[in-house]
Image 1 (cartoon, helix red, strand yellow):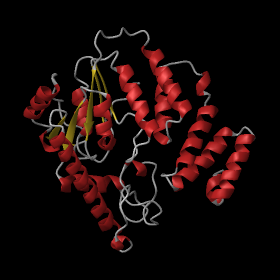
Image 2 (cartoon, one colour):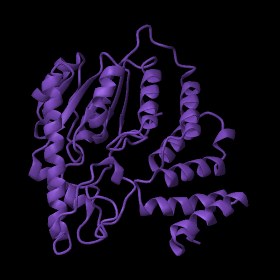
Image 3 (cartoon, one colour):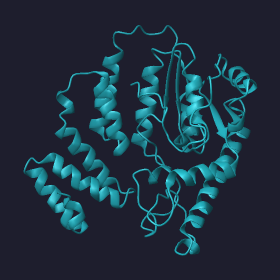
Image 4 (cartoon, one colour):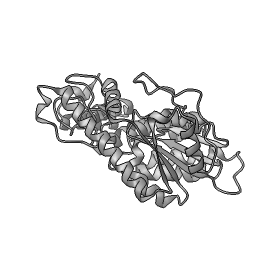
Length: 327
């Protein structure tokens, strides 16, 4: 039974509390999940969903293995890295790597970033061909557009651990943009590849992926707009004021917001590259089929980046072809 959809917020919270007191943790977690679905920006529902699911699935009693690590990552991708989840994940990661010899010299961290729909899967595929690499794509937990410290901390701790065992640790995601300065400070030799796709084609790809009409997804509109459906991914992107034309032309209004996002994202990349030319290299998405682009990346990163057999996700709107979460 979907309790949270049948009651106002205050009543639903009380029901969730009663279910938790009665030991019905999964049912209580479901109520919190539904409450969070109404407003993805709220912390409390995400945190309660995370904590109750952690207890219900008895993560504390599960032995360390890759399956546990991936389950924790997926849970954090749906919620937030609460202290219990973050601690369990980091402890599990350390134990998974205990049997692997540590490197004499720590490896380097490399980040890929771009607005999305920009070739990050292809870049990850290329980086996965680098020797002694741990390469992932959008490895959880996601960072909000205005990242929480606990989200940043999990990634920082994860990278530090992995660089003890791998020559290169790589992840590519749109959410690195507003965390890049922080990571430059945390990892003195960190470098990044910024992907830059032609705006119109990038916007067109987003529009195809997010659906059309009222009730479709629009991560770039402020919450509670009454036109587009909320999504757990909304906090990963900036929220803009809803245009006056949204009621009469929701698709045109969404296209305008996505265009603003892609434009401003690329402008931010350009500013960072100008400030840190030795740490951020800009690559046009349209050049990911050219050997010259990989030669530039190889020279910039100081390692050989092999060119993939073919660009991935070309001509479709799927987010498939991602590497399985490694750790």
